[in-house]
Image (spheres, rainbow over the protein chains, first blue to last red):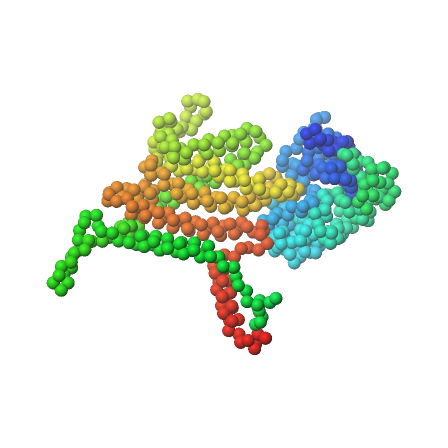
Length: 254
Length: 337
């Protein structure tokens, strides 16, 4: 059996005295789509941010592609990675944010090339060619000279996906990618994500879109109060939940 | 109700009577000001000019400009003034460049998670904002009293590799440049800090998620966006610095104001030289303000959906608007209907 893309064992995280993650176990298989659902404050975004080390987890073991996140184990000790090593880990994990976070001083094309050029050292022409292919893929080939403020939310989010894909990540993280969008723009972003899922990308998606979870996800994890309440095949978990919490949650969101 | 057809109801705009009265007073005041600026008064010596007209001799007092425009004209491009102007410009440029470099470094230190760095930065700002720049100027000018010589060597020992005499290294110009840079650094630090914290945290998170390290994030993502916030107050600082350099004449630097004062002392007449200096200061300030407009425009890229027009573009637009209005007015009624 191959190593899973992401493996979490008893991951804890707290801010001050507030414990956000209280021992989370999770396994993400290569090439599969995993959805994290749950009420706000349940820790799903925090878990996602721990995976690419935007947040440091306090306890437990978190591995991406078999490697510990943020640490290296040597002689029975854990050594914290330095800035450069962490950047190297992050460059292989794409992330898409709820509020897009496109670089507002750069046009669409530059947003998609800057990571390739500055982090991976790809030459500018190659980076542009790749960026144009990706913009074509997300349906925004005609917008390359636009600035983010000149685009709709849905278009910005599609550029953000292209920006993340430009780094050729082995794993894509989506943090509520459609929560800040007007309802009629949600579809265009989900379509891009479905297309990406079909292409075999390993994806972890924090979402409130139950329809998407049911249709695309291989596994759904329901988080509540910092622990995983229930997980499994979305067709089973979302249609016949066993825990009271999930039943209550689904009755509110559906 | 229509306002543009031929049978439109006539619209009577609100009459602002108060504004009319205020405008009348303002016009009167401006007229008085212009009149006094270009009025003539009898010369101080009391000399008279006499004419003989039809055998009758009439004498009138000899007149001169109240604001000595003749002398202003004579000294406005005097070589001493030109040399002074150059020194003023040099000092302004050096002090601002120094200030910006120090300011950005101090601001980054201030935002560091390392407490020692951030408190050092805080102390720097506290000290240099807390004492008058005039006092700091004299302090650096007199530094040789504290440190007669400088050496590069091993700290806390007397082993020195190179030694300089303070008086040769810290000439008046150097001391002025150091004093103004260090002082400006404290103000620029606050401006840069405001700019850096104005950039949304999501921007650095996105940069990190692409694998950029802290330096790259700062250089390619945060600083360019902070510039939009940093530029306008920096323009103010630059203009303010241009005028602050006039203080350096007190420590013997022959800047624009120093040169003007020097000439004034020689000809026993202050006012025309003050006017000469003022004209140069205001001219440079005007040029800097125009430059600021275009720099702000450049860094506003992406922050606004469309760029504001340049004054020239606006003027052309206004003229076109008026012309097209005049054209529509000339269109005959039959055609419009």
